[in-house]
Image (cartoon, rainbow, N blue to C red; front, side, top):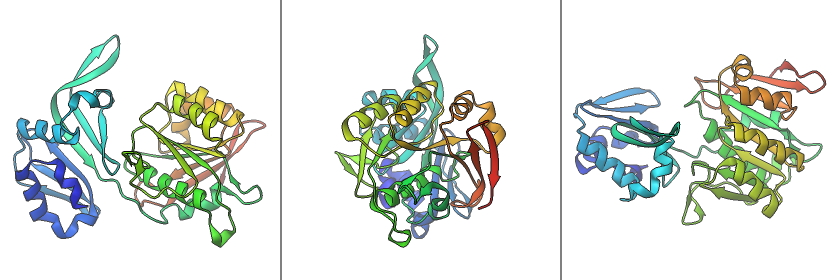
Length: 309
């Protein structure tokens, strides 16, 4: 995990290394705020480093994260975060520049949040029995829901690996999976090579909106399963409908914490009412990898029946 420190100015890199060099494997986030101390989020709590972060250090950090070409990352910055090698996400806040109702840039950067990405083998184990359809050697159309930071992407990455490589223990044969990795967090392609293990029968398209990427994969790679992280845009409705109507199964994630959140989200509610999903799986926001609730959808009357784990 030491490679993530290369994105920080020397002084900050040394201070972080001095504090937690022996605990790097427990590091989850590094937060920098202008004129504030550095805050590290570890899996057992926060650690405050007494170093006042300067505006110059914030900008230097962003510059290194953008491989010294902030302009080429303009579109990502406008979304509020960028993804660096290894799939780590850097959140950005500051003064937004608006043009015709859309954010086109963020000026006067105030804070950066490095969220450390990890491949946790077996993290999807508890979800498999709800997602795998052994009778058809395929998967159920599934929406995985959890608040930010609850491990959705980590679990999704492990699911992809298992589905695309096969699971001997339950006699599940590997099937073709198409992944739309819009922000480069799942496979973390670097010069065309995945930095994460995503299985032997997985095709990835990166740096493209989900609505475009799904169509490209279906037309060119004929996957049995389409996977995308963090759906919730109106464009996603048409794309997911297209994927399912093309004969693909789908596994997607979204933000939320309850069935009420799904019903209040117009995109997720529309997808549910269109009878897209077979299962809704809510993750435990506290213990990563655990399931909070599972619902099966009755497509005749669009009702949700809670099932046991």
